Length: 73
Picture (spheres, one colour):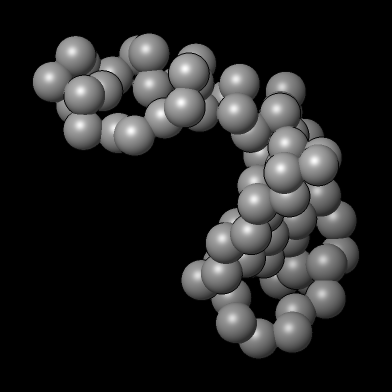
């Protein structure tokens, strides 16, 4: 797995495979885009507006877990 964050675009990209797989199609749900291979295997996940996404997601965690996650507010 490989993770990259583009600060200028505020996009986090997570590759699920180290192989050079070709993207056949993608599906988007709100700020998430999942890219799939021809065999329907997920290849890449893009998180748009990543800062907001993680801030909102973290707020839904129990308080004791939130304290363990270093986020710049």
